[in-house]
Structures are given as structure tokens and as C-alpha cells.
Image: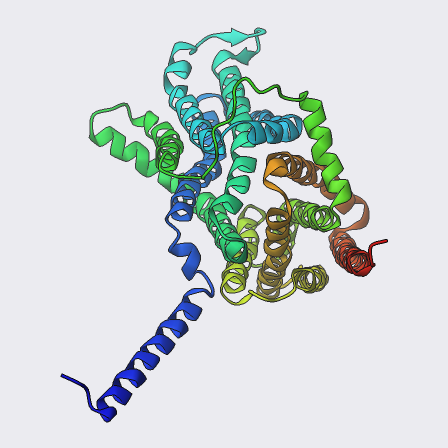
Length: 467
């Protein structure tokens, strides 16, 4: 039966409308977080990240809880015990960051993600029996053997973390399309900041709940904390077993260059690629400022009449909320915006927020607003710069570059912890804040200028006729 002319016209219009609607839907789906959230491989990595990073944040709270229960004496400052734990946690980051990056390139990244989490989980779960067996024994007559074992386990947990971090960063470009990297990194940063707030805010209650639940099923009450943290690492490892990275198996008989040569290759690549190097400089400056702020927040909280010094976490939480909200908006609406321009705006915003903080030592609400804005502008630097490093770095050197990045950022986090308090004593809190603002502004302008200059030279060389 043949269709009439009007029926054919209606049918054609209907299929055109359907095609237009499908195209519109595809365009909507290609924006924001939709493509990333539909990517099952990224969802597996993201879920593993949640459990692994939550365990990371609660781990130090677990160590403090064990120290308070087993080693701290009455009227004795807990810092005497906590400081060695912090040092044991920091040293591997400075020693093994670059080395771990080399092996991330040599080994399968999925294996590193899985094994590093499972080993960290096993280490934490061995704490209760080790502390029980070592009870009453000493090292060098003064140091309890149990505390020495805690230092050793903390050192090993931190060492495996140095392998997990660059492997995780190197996997993201393997499983996410280049056009979706900004959204993926925004989601990654949002999750990281949310877990930072959640981990430090509810870490202690979570550990208490774990102890309570364990005692209800007839197990010793005080092992619930270790089961929670170790279990979170183990769950992350089990989840990451399901990820498919698309990597080809490495040839075992292939002769590998010397480790130092691999590290040198990563350094040479950073020297040659201006975009990646400048992005890394921006991230180092940003992390240095936030490390200094973490120290100065205690003094600022002490000076603000409405809160006490020990409530400094309120200020850091405000910065985390600002960063998370900004990263979420950036991932949804930031596509197509020049990354160098975003970084410049973010750097100037960080500088302006720090100037505002220098005048906020007597007003809680002003301090909260300024720290929230500081976090929001910091995301405009961190997310696009991390995306630039991922998208511009070839697969063959990603592990090396991310290992060097991990190394540089860990040093950037460590030095301000020493220098910030000394600078505050000498120059005062407002002056230090203004100094940090100047560093943020100068760093942003300098790296933007270098990026523009390198882009200009690249365009000139590409437009030159071949002879």
C-alpha cells in the first residue's frame, strides 16, 4: 500500500525531528560529567579512589588513636609520639616519588593499583597482633617495640602510596577521552577534597563506630579501627581488579634501561615540553601555598575571637568546600575555556583571597569567606594544570612524569611546614599572608607568560616553510 504525499511528508518530518532530538541529546550528553559518569572503567577507578583515599585520610587518625591508648603517658604531650609518625609518613614521599614513577611505566598500572592497595590493607590489619605480641618489649631500652613497628608499617604504607598515586594519574588518560579529561579531573579533585573534609571531620567517630560494631560480634573491641582502615584499602584493591586499562602485557625478556636513565628521560621531557613544565610549576606553587596555609590556619584560628586554635579545621574545611564546588562547576561548564587563562585567573584570585585573609584575623565570617574563595580559585589552577599534564604527556613517559610530579609536590608540601611558622614568628601572620599572595600572583603571571611565549614560538616554527 503506497503512502499519500502528505503522509510521506509527515513521516519525513518525524524522522528529521527524531534525528534533531537525538543530535541535541548527544550534544547534551557530551557536555559536563555525563560522558565520564557513563564510562564504566572510570567509575571503577573512581570508586576505588574513594575507598583508598578515605583510608589514607583516616590512617593518621588511627595512628594518633593507638598512640593515645597505648603509648602516651599522663601529662605528656602527644606531639612527642605523633611527630615521628609524620616523619615516617613523609620520608618515602621524598625518597621514592621519582623512582616509583619509573616502575609505573615499566609495570602494568592495573597491577600496581591493585597490589599497592591490598598490601596497604594487609599491613594495617597486621597491627593488632603485632602490638599484642610486642607488648612490654623495648627497642634501645627507651622506645617501645610496638611503636617501632608502627613506624615501620607507616613507612611501608607511605611507600606503597608513592606507587599508587602516579599509577592512578597515569591510568586516567588511558580510560578517558582527551576531551573528557577536564571533567574527569574535576570529579577527581572534587572527590579528593570531599574525602579530605570527611576524613578529618568524621574520622574519629568512624573509628569509634567500627570498634563498637566489632565488639557486638564478639571480637576484641580495639581492633575495629584497624579493620575499618585496612578493610577500606583491601576493598579498593578488590574493586580495581575489575578495571580494564587497555595496556599491553610487558615483555619480560626486554632489556630495560637503568633506573636513573629513566628518571633522566622524565626530567629531559619536562625540559623540552614547556606546557607540561609550566603546569607542574603552577601545581608546585599551589601546593606550597596550601601547605603553608595548613600551618598558619592554627595561628589564625587562635587570633579569631569566635573559635579556638584547635578548631582550625573549620577554616581548612571552608577551603575544601570552595575547591570542591569550583571543581564541580569547572567540570560541568569549563570545556572550551583556555587552560592558561583559567590558571591566570585562578592565581590572581588566590592572591586576592590571601590579601583578604591578612585582614580577617578578627572576623570569623570574613575568614571563612576568604578561605572558601581561596579554595575556589585554587581549583581554577589545579584542575586545568593537571589536565594539561595528562593530555600533553605521551603514554611512554607518563609514569616518570607523574612520579617527578609526585616528588616535587611532596617536597613543596614539606618545606612550608618548616618555613611558615618561622616566617610567622619573624614577620607576623598578615605579612606572611601578603608574601604568599605575592608568590601566587607572580607565579601565575610568569607561567602564563611562558605558556604564551612557547605557544607563539610553536606557531611560528610550524608556519615556517621547509627548505
